[in-house]
Length: 156
Image (cartoon, rainbow, N blue to C red; front, side):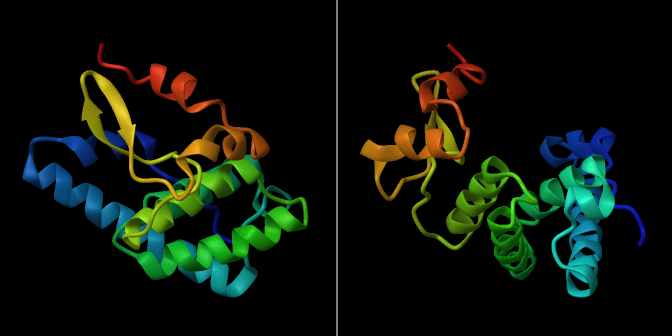
């Protein structure tokens, strides 16, 4: 099986002011999404046991950023849920992918992992299903409380 590899050095292209850089980023993420889809079709979710820690993390990152390939995100979410149930994948990473997929579907997220924007210098999450339980749900999957999480990104 071909190893998965996300070119993290080209990640800066996603937020570049240069349209050519943005287009290159979109091509790269689409290519990675297509390749991940092929791997999932043949092997299921690429767990660390199957492909190694680095490639398993790369698979999650590719799924997480396949925003324009919702079918790939949905398949990854389903397969990753099965892998988490079997103890072969990270509940924390699954929570991030779950929220990302929900937001991409125009729905409310569960864990508050996806940031909609910045207000008064602080990151604000996309709407959540149960905002009053957000930190409790985050703790269940190993994610720090929202305030600690966004403090890393605070603009204040």
